[in-house]
Length: 314
Ligand code: Q46
Ligand code: ZN
Image (cartoon, rainbow, N blue to C red; front, side):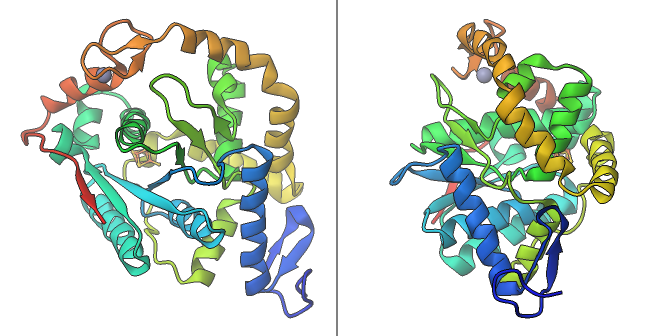
């Protein structure tokens, strides 16, 4: 197996591109894929302030590294979820990554800053933890971006994540979600722009990228992932991909070019009905308290500690 670009011995094959690469050319290929995604979808303009949502896992740390490598300066935001040792270690990997590279990292801790954690939220809502966890992340990433003057929030969603979410949304015809499923979500009143620069790269490629670049990351699975239905969709899609390489990429790129437009109107209508949350001011469809503020007040009752203010590390 030889590298497609330089003909040296290859260390990784990428069946969907019918190609293999040596370590140097593979990292070059990853950078090119990120540049292409950013360019194609007009994710980030020169000079814009970028905030990367970092979890301590391979995708978000690879994303932070890749943006830095292609000369797009970005600060990080780590959200402490309070999921025991898993969160403790995730925070340690993130802080070490930022410190080694001299990058600026913001930290928000659910328990310290908002008086609840993900296990408490799951208990209070009596639902799978991922729902409350995802809601908290979306709200707080956006809030920190707006409060700290960032133009864009970049997340580490990769090709596998997008294909699994798309399959879930299609299976249930979640049309409003389909309208919002795109590599870039524009800014609006109360919303920073959201972008996914890793959509052209797979989970396996991001793991390989971290190994090659010497990035230490959290390899443990989240212990609260059991109720996450996307894991099942990923397994199914992996089976299809093994039989027919390129299936996932064709599924999502076909949706973006031929399906997404059909659902935009519904997502736009939903945005047009938004009004400020009576408690935090974030846009909400309820006309009262937003879903985050409702969750927080219910979840706080399952915890004991009181909130303190946002801490920023430079
Ligand atoms: S951290 Fe949160 Fe994930 Fe854990 S509780 Fe679910 S959503 S699985 S990316
Ligand atoms: Zn609110």
